[in-house]
Amino acid sequence: AGLFSLFPHANTECKLAQMRLLTDLFLPLGAALGPCLPGLAMSLLPGVEDEASACYRECLALLDAIRDAVGFPAFFRALWWVLGSSAGTRPPLVLLLDRQLSFATHSLHTRPEEGAGRE
Image 1 (tube, rainbow, N blue to C red):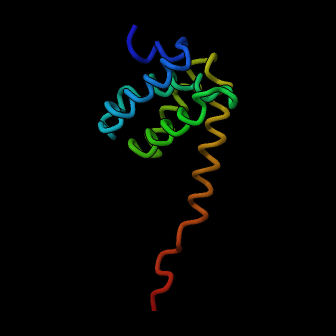
Image 2 (tube, rainbow, N blue to C red):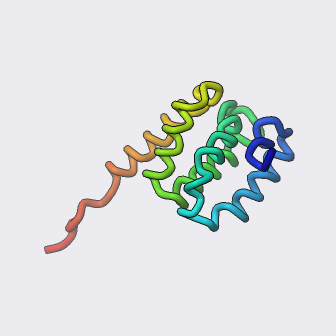
C-alpha cells in the first residue's frame, strides 16, 4: 500500500498524475528524500523499462530531477541498494545506471578547468 506501490501497476494516465504529485510534493524536500529514496527509485523504474511508453521521457526527467535534488552520492547509493535487493527491477535499473553514469562521466569531462582564464 502507499503511493510508491501504485506506479508499476498503474495505467499511463495514473502514472503521469503520480509523477506530477511526486514533482510537486516530494521534489521540494530535496535531500530530505533520503530515507524514501530506494523505494521511490524502485517504484519509478518500470517507467524507464520501455522507451516507447508514453511516460518514458517524463519518468527519466523525474529521476534526473530527483538525482539533482538529493545529489549524486545519495542517488547512486539508492540505485545500488535497489540493484542488490530487487531482482525484478534489474533490467530497467541497468539501463538507468548506464544513462546516469554516462551523464556523470560527460559532466566531469565538460567542466571548465579551475583557474582557466585567470592570469
